[in-house]
Length: 79
Image (cartoon, rainbow, N blue to C red):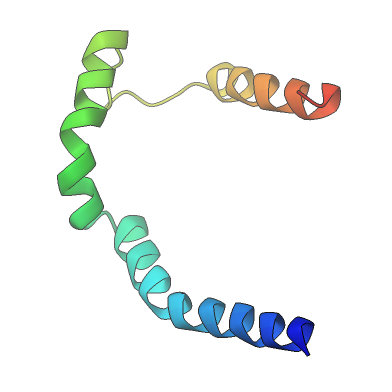
């Protein structure tokens, strides 16, 4: 009985957060400003300034590939 209750609760939570999460993802993909970007925007800009990153500059092909290597390496080695 406990397992059934946990399953129902889990599915209920997933259904409850799907609509707000979908609205948030739609705003992010369309480039609209949302609550999270207002709160974390200054933090993100501060990190960009600290690391001397231009947010308007497009990333090159080699840059994209080099950003995929560390997570892939960690997943292979199990770190």
